[in-house]
Length: 255
Image (cartoon, rainbow, N blue to C red; front, top):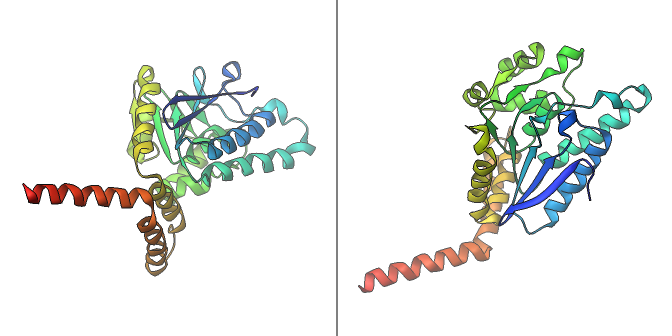
């Protein structure tokens, strides 16, 4: 059982983690970091293909719980735990979707950026709000945003703490889709279900390739793709699809 999370399986092959501190706007405490790490491990070991990460109440995640940052001596430890969590989510071998039901600010936005895809409620607000506290991004925001929208715009958002509407985030390419708040749960499950239906060996290799080849030379990217494709050729799902295609073709030819 988790204290700060709800874990569910809302649809076949989908694993959902809900941040469940609505009174605190799902602010991240030390125990939240730890439980998220455990829940992600649970997902990776499960038979489910896609993770949905969302929040309870009117916020996805409002950032770090500053009541836990009063003891300065604990800051290095807390930062390390948080950054380990971000890496774990970013490196998750399966696909991940953040469903932004409301505010996603600071560390909360970084958590969403570490996911592969983001679906946002129309009312949601997104901000790298660290600067308003005299801080810098510590959850990978400088890296993740720069890769998504380019360095100048990323730096602008980080340096100003500008709050974005869901529509603005969509136009920038930070979120993939937006929908009315009341449809977010159904739309995120529908989106995840489509991903879960795809051949998973190929999906996971594609995720690895996209991350691996970011910044690589074309030669290296081609080598990585060749290695991945050879694995796909040996995969049972690919072989079954090819066999079904050939059988249909023979049947049409015979007709």
